[in-house]
Image 1 (cartoon, rainbow, N blue to C red):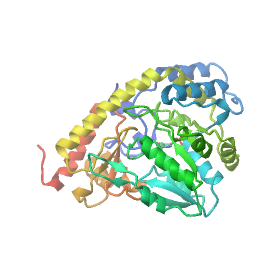
Image 2 (cartoon, helix red, strand yellow; image 1 turned 180 degrees about the vertical axis):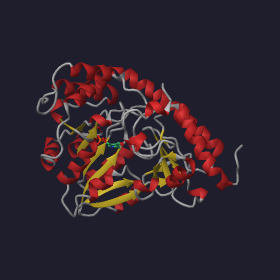
Image 3 (tube, helix red, strand yellow; image 1 turned 90 degrees about the vertical axis):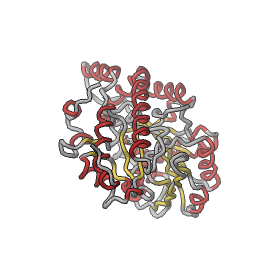
Image 4 (cartoon, rainbow, N blue to C red; image 1 turned 135 degrees about the vertical axis):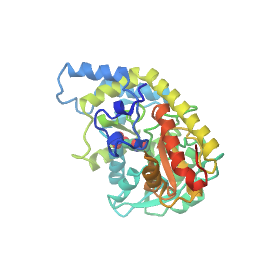
Length: 388
Ligand SMILES: Cc1ncc(COP(=O)(O)O)c(C=O)c1O
């Protein structure tokens, strides 16, 4: 793989062009790996034809491929008529906020959380009810405080907005945790919208969709997913909302009529190629991510043992707490200014995110090493150490 930042700076991207050239960017969730050949050739093949409107409602071959993918990888049976193909998972969160909840009603959400969850709630006048995950130390990581979560629920609470696997903590919720969340939703007649965009990026075991826990849960759940993260094609813009309860899908569609379009024809070709022929590429990427996760773990144990860190169980995002270091400002800002390395600022992930940074591990090992050594150089004077 090419680890020359000059190659990565080719073609304008949010990741590589937000900051100046001296900065190593390990922030926004975008991978530094070449496109899967299967996707590249499918896109080129499509360009030999026309780029007219795709079929309304989406390519039927694609819907079959999605059903096959979910069956193979998650043992989840979904049929094409339970899918709504659209152009954005975040758009799906907004559609759920609008379609399953009214202004002034409440949405339950675990924090810290991928920031668009918070805007999907607040920008439509819905009321956020946040419950911060509880840090149990480096060996245990985060857990859900179910008592606190339950206490947030009122008669005005309509929806549980879940991120599974969880961005930014990298938690892959256990069956027991998902059952706890589903139970809480059923008892309180909440809808569930579950963003499972990182489902293909888990390091052990298979992903368990919350909708697959029981018929009852399936009836109350909309699952949002897509190939954007796992195949690194977010710039193509495609997502799928899935529910056994077609009325819920209708409500999302109605709420976003004219605003959230269907996916473009190139995005559909890419997703079809990914879900029918992309598995070997994905397996290779997971191997690299596993190594990078180990590299980071070793680096923390050696150089920064006071950091709060539990290895991500899924996603390619690592979540690092630096509160113990008593930095003079927020850690992302400090590391950007003093170390010329860009991580996401923890405070942007809402309550519980302060004092943390999110590190994107989907890069070449050499770039990760370079970024970590810059971070160490920046942090060492504060810790009374001056590396050679
Ligand atoms: C949990 C999660 N949901 C949604 C998105 C973005 O989805 P989309 O680009 O399809 O709107 C991201 C991107 O990082 C993400 O991490």
